Length: 236
Image (cartoon, rainbow, N blue to C red; front, side, top):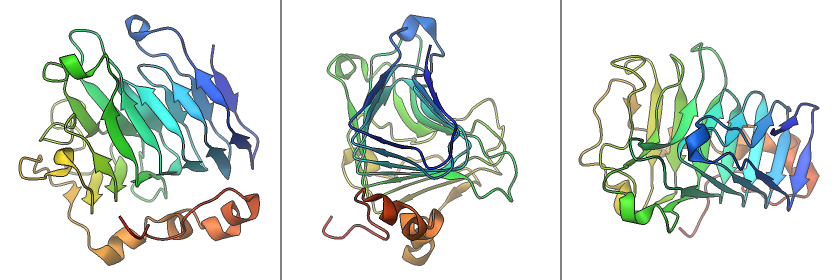
């Protein structure tokens, strides 16, 4: 069983969502969100594969902790994860770990995942196996998958290649993946994959993915009373 959110303008604060199926059960969603203008503040989503199904519409996550192994943030929403902690858990012996699997299927869709000032780190049970079960930032679930990771702390658990294929060369030319002003040993881009869909963005381009622009957060997040930063986060 999992929690599902459908109605618009849903707000959750200080709540946990857990799927206890474990890695052995493979896909096991803890939370599915189809709510437009959904806000999650100081919440925790724990699972293994497919923990958070950010299904569709506009979603904002602030100061949340999300744990998992494979594609543990996936879906086709236009969502921003600000100041969130992404915790990699120990997978099955034959599995790699992938943080995101964004599912944009049409280039004209306004969807995409934005991870801003997030921290990618490993749980205590994952660290001993990180050399065997590598961690990737994301892989393309659908043809026009779009994800940008910016101003975030990437610990050494993130493999040098950065991004993982879904199957063969599927979507490698049509996806849109970018990294901007990240920090930490996992942020070094020397050995990143060189797919056509990997983008080098300018500061002006990255600004288009901030909460105030990408989600028009000033129209609805600001009114909620939940803290958020509309633009780039200063002082990092």
